[in-house]
Each structure stands twice: as C-alpha cells, then as structure tokens.
Length: 414
Ligand SMILES: Cc1cc2nc3c(=O)[nH]c(=O)nc-3n(C[C@H](O)[C@H](O)[C@H](O)COP(=O)(O)OP(=O)(O)OC[C@H]3O[C@@H](n4cnc5c(N)ncnc54)[C@H](O)[C@@H]3O)c2cc1C
Image (tube, rainbow, N blue to C red):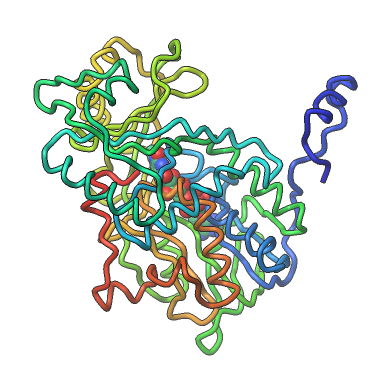
C-alpha cells in the first residue's frame, strides 16, 4: 500500500490524480480463514485490525452484508468521551479515547479526530451530585475530567441559555480531551489497514447460518457461499440477537431505533460538544457548519433504521429551551440506526456457549467512542481467550448479577 502524505498529494496533483490506488481490495471469499468477523462496522474492523497488529493473526475475513460502515458506524453523531462512572467502563473507554488521539497516524488515514471538549450539563441537583461523583471516580481512574460551574459553561458555550425556565444550567462535567471524529473515515481507515495486512474485507456478503460440529463453530453460510473458520466473532450491533440465534444462543439485548438530524450549515458558533441529558438532547457543530443533533431511543423495540417522528420533535423542543437560537434553523435531514441495548447499559465482549464463537455487542447508543478500545480488547479475547479489558464484560454477568450499571451515570448513553 502506498502511504498517504503531503508529498503524495503534491505528486498526484501534478499528474492529475491518476496514480491513487484503491484503498482496499474487493476479494472473493476463500474456502477457509483462521478467524471470520461478521460485521464491517467500526468494532468488527477494529477487532480484525488488532488481531493482525497485536497478535499477528492475519488470515482473517470480515463479512459485511451491506457496505462497510453502513450500519451504526456511519450513522452516529460521533461523540467521543470516557467519563464513565464504573471502573471497567472507564478503563475500556479511556483506552479507546487515547487510541483516537493517534489513530490518524497509526492508520495513516485522516480520521479528523477533534478533541474539542465535551460538556455534560447538570440541570438538576441530582445531576450535580451525580457528575461530581463521576468526576471524583474519573480522577481515580485516570480519565481527565472536572466538574465546572455555570459561569464556566457559559464561557465555553456562549450560545447557551443558562437560565432556562424549567432546567437552568447548574454546572457540567467537562472532559477537555473528549470530542468527535469523522465516522466513515474510522471505518475506511481500518478497512484499508486490514486489507493492507492481507485480510479480506468482503462486502455484500450476508451471513445466513452458523455451522457447528460437536458444540464448536466450523464455518458460516453466506450469500456468497459456505466459508469455513476456526474462530468466529459476531460484531453486528442491532442485529446481534438475530445472528446469535443462528449460533443457537440467546442474548439479553433489545434492539431499538435511535435517530439524529442536522441543521442547515451556519457560521461557527459552538466549538465544544454539549450533552443535555435531563432535557434529553445533545449537539455539536460539524466542520461543514451543520448543527448535529441527537436525542433518545424509540420507546419500543424495532428493526427499522428510521425511528418515530415524535422523537425528533421532542429532541428539538428540548434543545430549544437550552439553545434558543436553534429555533431559527431549518433542519436538513434526519436518519436512524438500530442500536443494541443491554439492561445495565454496558457492552458485552464475551465468549459464548458455542466453542470458538465470540460476541461483541450491547454498545447501545454509545459505541462509536469505544471502537479502537473495543477492537483492541476483542482481539485479545479472540486470540487469548480472556483479557483485562474484557473480563468484566462477559455474558455470565447477567446470570451472576454482576452488572456494570452505567445507566445511572449515563442517563443518555452517547
Ligand atoms: C443516530 C445514532 C447516534 C449515535 N451517536 C453516537 C455518539 O455520538 N457517540 C457514540 O459513541 N456512539 C453513538 N452511537 C452508537 C454507535 O453508532 C454504535 O454503538 C457503533 O457504531 C456500533 O458499531 P458496530 O461496529 O458495533 O455496529 P455497526 O456499525 O452497526 O456494524 C455492524 C455491521 O454488521 C452488519 N451485519 C449485520 N448482520 C449481518 C449479517 N447477517 N451478515 C453480515 N453482516 C451483517 C451490518 O450491516 C453492519 O454494517 C449512535 C448511534 C446512532 C444510531
């Protein structure tokens, strides 16, 4: 693979961009792989990348039923933070956040990581206490966050109304090195690096069955034929319940639609990410100038990638209270994804009842930020059978009652 560099851009400009090569190959499936990953979203691709990079396991295929990054990875609002309350979560998300810091260099692909800072607003006394507690926990965990007062919030976000009628801003949990990244680029950067290591990223290849012999996985059936494997990673977000059923086990997961929307582009007016969990909305400004807005999930299970209209109405109404200026913006477009939600709002990175099958799911509304850490941890789990970042996130925690309860800390879990 030719490296991307300032020199390469200049060279290609001089020869009318005729020398760029394809970023990744489009191979036909081989008969057998050491490891197959189902799902070419960020988590599946990052898992494959770290299998190759950290463990030298490169005879790997990543099978995607649509196009890579076309699931939640290409549909999310890209908030990156690691200010979680529980120790196992903070360890995993901070690992991910720190890997985002160097991802563009590591992948030689500009993922536009923008550590512009994230504020989670405290708009009730309960939230003030909750976020102060999280700030103390983060200090012990090594994630740099601080609780700030309303004046500092106003300084950071001049367009905010801190004296809202229902929910005045009482402060916020501030993570200065949180931020955003370009979601497609994360998927594309990993795909390019995987392809360069000799791995096969195969799009338009839907897994339709998981073949087992004597309780062990031996391969999958796909829309492009049968493929054998020694190990299988299921990394399919909102489709996890469906694919796990193919392997003969059930998951404590619910699938629901989550939506986002963007406004018409406007001049730069907000250079941090703001989450308002009490009124239930969050907002950042994209490089193009659009206000990127998200809210909560639909209140019922479904597999549509659209979501109900009333949710958009509720989200915008909530945000207008805190950011009155957005009432004058036209909304350009809206979209949805299917997210996979667990009872304790924490992910599952686990072995399964089928020997050789591993699952990575349950990231719900907040897994984009975790992609590099999750890939790192999942690769270790697949290669070695366990790992310090995944041990607490096994499926057995639901049977044993060892929940990692982030739902309290994360009201809305983006
Ligand atoms: C509107 C919205 C906003 C969000 N905002 C944020 C945010 O601000 N910050 C944040 O951290 N997270 C956010 N998230 C959550 C985040 O997008 C997800 O947690 C994350 O992208 C999940 O990545 P993934 O790789 O697990 O899943 P996906 O990207 O969904 O990838 C799974 C892939 O598996 C494929 N697949 C499914 N079944 C099969 C099959 N049978 N065979 C082959 N392939 C299959 C799918 O086509 C899909 O491409 C948001 C999500 C949505 C929908």
